[in-house]
Length: 354
Image (cartoon, rainbow, N blue to C red):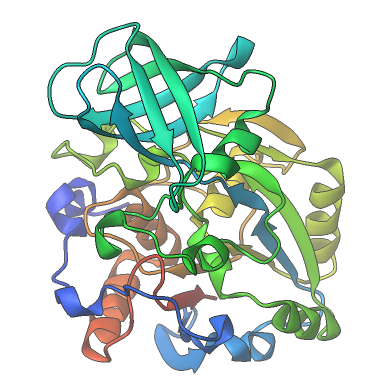
């Protein structure tokens, strides 16, 4: 039985020196450090992502999230007042409408138009605000309805960096670096960050080790950054994210586990999707919006190992990782990572929990 403090939000807080929050990616993705945590022995080893093939076994199945980050950050001017406006594309709706999170001075009104401009100022798009929703969200309609949302965002959008990286301000190199090398399915407004460490060369070495690489898709939503606001973590309302896992991927994972291999999830997004698809106790193909919230007590049916970045205090992601890896062990591992000056968050280093 879990101890009562495991349900209290304060239990998931920790001190992190500000200078350990990575502001830039490394020149070589796979040079990131990797803290390998062994649950069976309760110990850890300092390593590097480039050494990942050493920690995997022939017969394992490495599962990655192939969702592609869309340039969802929008910057422009209100046509009525000339005031600065910022927005975040959340998702496409029927009939060409967009769901957008808006930020500006003053009160926005239905029918108002926003002129959005690209990072270099060479392209622009007009958005008309149609209807207000709660918490700063609006339904908007772009003036070029003959193009897909992804085409329009590629034209005028910017990389949606989280606020703890340079205040969310992109640089040209972020277009390539805030994206996994295997991203193919557009829809995320934040990167599945554990995957940012992989290169094509590293994936080739992993396959040569006899490890299967399987894909799922889970589109990361803005809710991934939303802090827990309730004292008891179980009272937090979890955000929903759309995902899908194919019959082929299910077969790859099942074959690996039946042969003695492990299902190694790359990122908390993969854990969330696989465990959603395995709530019956048996992993099955699945598609839809998951609102699964992993916190103590929780039974994992699909995932054996987890590679993940270091997460924000008091966040649902940290709760998930400590639920999976063991509360005391992961808390001590985080203390070690801080003491050894690991780099934290999206552009930071990683942890592998075996």
